Image 1: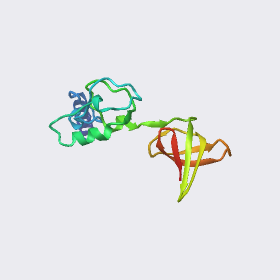
Image 2: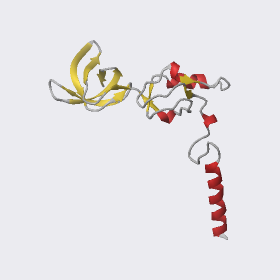
Image 3: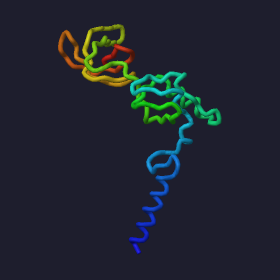
Image 4: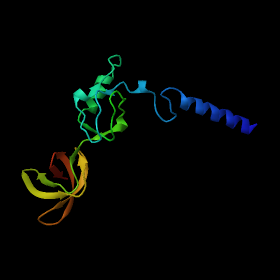
Length: 150
């Protein structure tokens, strides 16, 4: 009897997976009313013109605004739904890039040149080596090529 139940469950799973647009792991396309307006390569920074939104979904405009400025993790085909997992914070500092390090404490402000030991986007904490002293410090990325030592 247990074998019969297991076989029925397997057949139901196979039917669900073979349904149009269906997979047990992928949410339906209707779950993401935001689609790519054109094909976007991996690493492309998303702009307003790259997105098409579903006007019937009241939340789609806000979700689209959150996507603008992020970077595609993988190639996005034209017309394909864009999920939050398809995007990441845009890379502002690449590994081994020269960066401007800033340290501010009250009226004191120190600026030095450093080398990023890893890459990241705005708000990410990375390790940076001061080129003068060879000291490694933790810093937050605030802009393209600029980090703040915390």
